[in-house]
Length: 53
Image (spheres, rainbow, N blue to C red):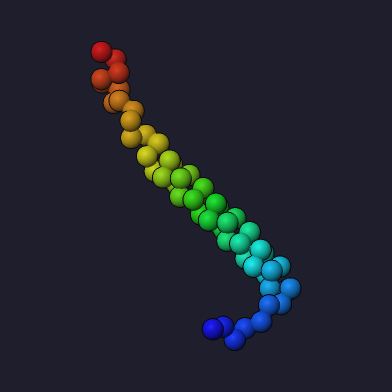
């Protein structure tokens, strides 16, 4: 059994944590994708010698 009791202010804190956590995960995922795209930006370009053929 749980010894805790329900407090209405707990719901506000829970939703605040949920929203902040979701935003933080979205920002983290966006940053990882952007950094990965920057790193591999020129990986699929052909060298100039092959492009002129």
